[in-house]
Length: 332
Image (cartoon, rainbow, N blue to C red; front, side):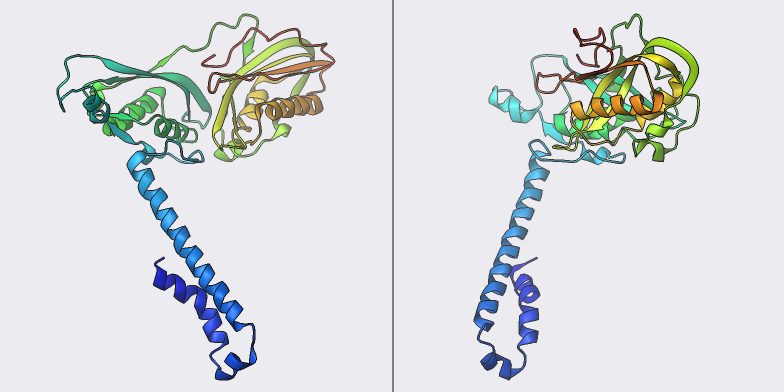
């Protein structure tokens, strides 16, 4: 909004109110109202200028340093290129000519998508970008892009990887065939634990992924001692709005928890907002209320951020925690 438009917008109500000539003489507060309207117009102009400056800066520099919520839909347009010439000129290298060969290897641990049945899948993806490409991809924009895949369905893992390869290649300026994207094993062997991530055979509607639902938890009459885990724990940070990823570990004695129902419950937390500690406490309370275990311990092994990983442990009638269970989140 330009200055003239802002003036018209904020002064119009005052002018209309005082269009009657008698109002100018009868209302002693009009000068105050006029001053307030002028101040409001000036503030509107300042806000518009700042918004325009932020937009221009973001277009030039990308989203690095900006607060951005995680995209809810597939968004390849968030990927932002940075020309390699910016850094290479500082090294005295001429544009387009380098005396070496090589590649940039990116290990991406926050990669998750939906399979053909709507079930969340996850894995660590290694990207290899040739150093001859004219651009690199800004790291935060890549993170936002990968997060935008969290609710997109793919018929196969190969299709998901091909999409990532194509989209990143288009930004860094190389052929998709010149860029490598592959899954790699980021999870050590977990002897003595049963993973529930691959036991569900049902179609999963997207609505189930949008709201936590503890009523999904089911038990049988068998009484067992079990150690269950899932690598599909995803919640949202209440400060940044970005996803937090981790491995959820549940140790219990009591009625057998139906494995597929536990998986469905865990993936229903994908848009739950809370700190790591709150997420683990919610799971512990939900399992306690709906499954009635005699003993229960819930551990969250979260992906590290800024060199720090947080691993809350909550026990009920299990005894004091003596150390972390031998399982790790991707990237730990």
